[in-house]
Length: 193
Image 1 (cartoon, rainbow, N blue to C red):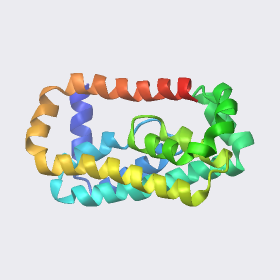
Image 2 (image 1 turned 90 degrees about the vertical axis):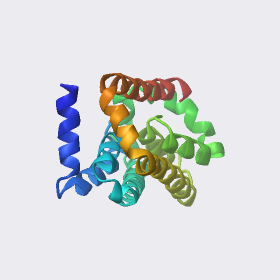
Image 3 (image 1 turned 180 degrees about the horizontal axis):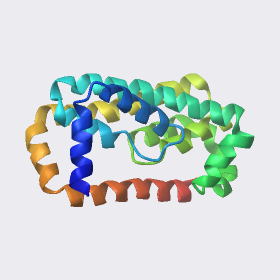
């Protein structure tokens, strides 16, 4: 099953609408969707390394725009949609105590969540709900998300062939590790918030 999914994503990477799919996934991941865009970025760069920098740019721009959507959910819809999303991910109970100290180190939270498997969407909503200064949020998001996606794209661009062979050889193990990182990010969010 993993092999079919991997092959499907690799075939999708060659499709004419692949960039739109990547941008959509990157946008919604930043505010509501739990699957990181790396799941699409990596196979797309492996399928077409010449577009690595374009894909990283698309991921960065759409991720920051999605982050702004999360910010505005927190700022304007916190009592309805923001609270529902935090409850869905199990973070509401910890959010209130977290919010009181958030703005002091908000740029670091945004940067850390934007760069790591920590759920960025939680931080985008928290930034809006706590009224983190919008320029600070945008700057930290652009730097963190850009760094994350350009480093991934760069590594795949320069070392793509050996990495592709490695991924294909250890697809099952890498999939488990990827999902463990995602789960670890959600667990970290639960206990750090």
